[in-house]
Structure formats: structure tokens, C-alpha cells
Image (tube, rainbow, N blue to C red; front, side, top):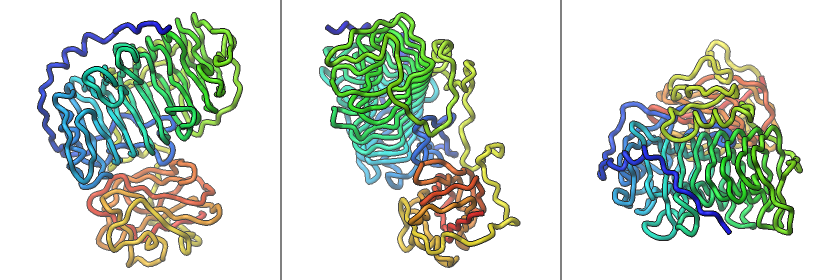
Amino acid sequence: MRRPVALRLQAALGTLALAAATGVVLAMPEAAAAAGGATGYATQNGGTTGGAGGQTVRATTGTAIHQALCGRADSATPITIEVEGTINHGNTSKVSGDSCSTAADKIELKQISNVTIVGVGGGAVFDQLGIHIRESSNIIIQNVTVRNVKKSGSPTSNGGDAIGMESDVRNVWVDHTTLEASGGESEGYDGLFDMKDNTQYVTLSYSVLRDSGRGGLIGSSESDVSNGYVTFHHNKYENIDSRTPLLRGGTSHIYNNHYAGLNESGINSRAGAKAKVDNNYFEDSKDVLGTFYTDQAGYWQVSGNIFDNVTWSEPGEDTNPAGPDPRSNTTVSIPYSYGLDAASCVPDVVSATAGANKGLKVSDGSCTPQNPDPSPDPTDPDPTDPTEPSPDPTDPPSGTNLSIGAGADGSSKASGTSYGNVRDGDMGTYWSPAGTTGSVSVKWSSPTTVSKVDIREAAGSEGAIGSYRLVDHGTGAILATGSGAGVIGFPAVSLTKITFEITGASGTPKVAEFETYAG
């Protein structure tokens, strides 16, 4: 029998309910971005930058958020939406447009990409209104509170999920959020953070999830195993019955989280899922790790965790707890770097950093909260970044241009241009994206070693390219970032496809040649 979930809403949030029911969208003179940068699996598959390089607007209603999405040139035009006040059913309506597909009963991020939603000023509260991400990519949600979203009763929103993702979602970073309910399924609530139907490359960081029957899931059923590559770090799970999270298939990295008051079960790895569980602090909880409520096993690799007043069930047909002496039964390889705090300091670090309106503080593995790095300016790269290229027109690449005769493709192309124009050796032809941003790739049929590229702009368009990323398409590794065209050097890598992704531009970029060299 499930225990009732206590209501622990912060009284301070009540003051935000006085926000006006009308909203305004104001164009800002410069593009803004989420503070800091994506972490975990959201850095893979080309990375997650949200609306960086695009326009910034301010919204105080849900309708204004939808208007901002619908007012873009197309569904991929980068945009940062700064939100302040209380967003609810009373001020959220459907808006129509070619660059959006919205709904009146939720914040709908559907069939779009390159969007940041960030709380500013006195805070952003989505009250009884969930955020739904569907068939979308490159999304950042930061510094917001989502509370009391119901699937039954009144009003209902988003199937009862505070934040829900489904149907071919890629690259989402949710950071410094507070996700909370006021009970479990019998009270009308569902999950706080759910992913299903082919959702991949997601990170949930520095967030608080509390007072809910269900923390969240990856996979809606034992057959929905196409999801995965999800990172959970520096989050606080408090007064949750189960699913912190529930994993069905896929790979997850779960580190430096604080779990307190898990009433029935915690990390539930099943249906072949693999979880790397590092340096977490579990206290006053039951069955915090294992395979529960199914006979389809999941797996885990554990190290450095602290179990403080944790109780464990006896193994049974549908119960396979990892404790009381948790041991690894698989290995998980993590493709990105990360700073790991000692488990003993996790409660203090997470308390100081996790949740909305906490100043976006982070940890670098030293057990000491740090202020976030300044918002990255796509037109002003950090010269101390070791991945930062050093274009030098006096030091052109030498050797054979490996792009000649190779293949090419990309994300979009403007009318009259071609991907193949970037590897034909002809400066008179070029590729342009359909908008101001996009990507073009050079590819080979077999692994090819590359250590330098030269991006050459067509005559008359010099200087149009702003911020960019150079990506190993096969692994998602970012080889270099910077601003402007020219020579880009990086450690030699063997790959079959290399992608030049333009994330910011002034005007329409025209790439005449995407030259690649071994040295």
C-alpha cells in the first residue's frame, strides 16, 4: 500500500501568483544564452545550445511564449525566451503559425528546435501547466518551477507530467529547475520528468524533484527501449514514492544526487537498462536501487555511494534490490568528462545549488558551490579555451584537400545552393542554410584522418559566419568551437563524417569550400 505524499510547497512561491495575466514579448538588442553550458549526455550528438545566437524575447504569459515560438522565421530559428511571473491556464492559449504547433493546455514545444526557456527576474512558475517536448531537438529549460500538473481532476495538463518528452526528441538540457507535485496518482498527478518513444541525449542537472508519487521514467513500457543516454547529476529527490528514475532500456549516468525520503523504491533499472551510479547520497529511504515490479532485469555499475538509513526488501520474483551490499553487475563507459564530488558532501552541495532561483550555482567537483560561467557570447569566443581554434591566414593548411571527391550533406540548404558545392574546389559556388544557421558535412566511405579544416566564404559574404561548432558526426564529439570562417586546427582524429555547424550569423552565410586536411 502506497504511503501518502506530504505537501511541501515553498511558501515563497506564493508571492509569484500575483503576476499579471497578460504578457508582453519584447525583442532584446542582443542574443542571450543559458548561463553556463550543457553537461552530461546533452553535450553529445552535436551538443545542446538551445537558442544561443538568436533573438531574445521576454514573456510573462504562456500565450506570449507561444507567440515567440510562432513569430520566428522558421521552426529552427534560434530563440531565447526569458520568462517572468506565473504561467497558468488562464494566460496560456494556442497560437498558430508556420514555425510552431502549440496547444492551450500546456507549453508546447512541438516539431521545433534551437529554443531556450529561462526564468529571469523574480522567477518563473508554471502553475498546473506542464511543458511538453515532442519531435524536437536542441532545447534548454533553465531556472523555472513547474508545479502541480495533473492528469485527472481539474485543470489537467500534459498527461500529468511536469516536463514530458516523447517522439524522436534529441538533445535537451533541463537545469536548475524545481519540479513538484502535491501527491501521487490517486491525487491526479503523474511523473515529474518523463521521457519516452525515442528520446535521447538528455541531461537533468541541479534540479529539485519533490512531493510526488513518481519522480520520472525513461520508457513508457517494457517494449519502449529506444530511449537513453540520459544524465542525472546534482539533483535533490525528496519525498518521492518511486521512479527516481525508472529506466527501461538505454544507458543512464546518475551521479552526485541527493535522495531523501524515497518511500517505496528509487532507481529502478529494468528491461535491459544500464545505469552508472556514482557518488550519490541516499538517506531515510527504501530500496533505493535495483529492479522492481518486473522480472525483466536491468543492470548497474556502482561506486562511491553512501547509504544512510536505507532499508532493503527481500529478493522475490518481481523484486531484485541491489542492497544491502550493492555490487556492480555491468560496466558503463561514459563519453564525456565530468567533475565528481565526494558523496559525503553531496547533501550540502546540492542544497546550495539545486533548484530554481538559487543563482544557477554549480559544482566543479571540489565540494564547493561555484558561480556559473558567464553566458557564452557566440561572437566573442574564450581565447583560453583549449578547443578554441586559432585561424591564421598566414599559416594555410598544406597537403591534399581531402574534401575533393568526398560526399556532403547537411541540415538544410537555401534555394539555388548545394551541399556538394563545398567540396568541388570552385570558389564560385557555395552552400547556404535555409535560415541564418545550419550545418554542412563532408563525409567519406572509410575512416579518414583529419586535423585541420579551412572554411572559406564566398565573395561578398565574408564575415557573415558568427559562432560555430566543428563536430565528429559519428561520436558527437565537439572538435572545436569559435567564431568566423578560416583555418581551424584540432588534434588529429579518424572519422567518416565531419560537420561544420553554424550556430550564429549576421546575414546569410555562404560557404564556398569546406576543405579538410590531414595535417
